[in-house]
Image (cartoon, rainbow, N blue to C red):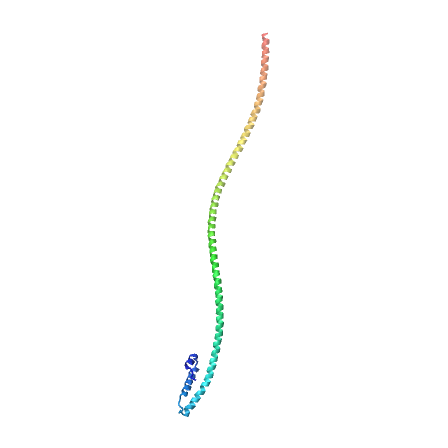
Length: 212
């Protein structure tokens, strides 16, 4: 049975293979060598035939080792594939979570924008209210000054009224005194009139007596 040398070259590249392949060439060559070879050549070829069996054992061991390594690599590759599938699933979950987080972030940004707009409006309203308060405060300050002025004027009017009341009371007292003096004078006048009437009557009587 012929050995496929090309396949052996492709499968194995260890340093043992060149000698093994050379030996196989020698074996194939011996199949077609004429029986007229001398004994020395036959002996050499027999020795060469014994060598490939040892090299073949080593090659088989090497092949078995490589097969074991391939199985280990295959097992590691299977584990790596499972790990890769798991990582892909985790990436898918993370991607889904990231999409949800992005939507939440967009929503929060929109809410922040709304709050910012509302805050801007509230700030403008507050500024307007502060301006109105300042105007009211200015008006109140003016009103307070006007009230102070009015109180001062009232105080002056009250002082003047107090003086006027005192003056009026003094005048009333003087009037009362004048009235009392007038009453006394009237009484004195009445008395004097009565005395004059008496003198007149006495004068009339005296005149009548003088006529007689």
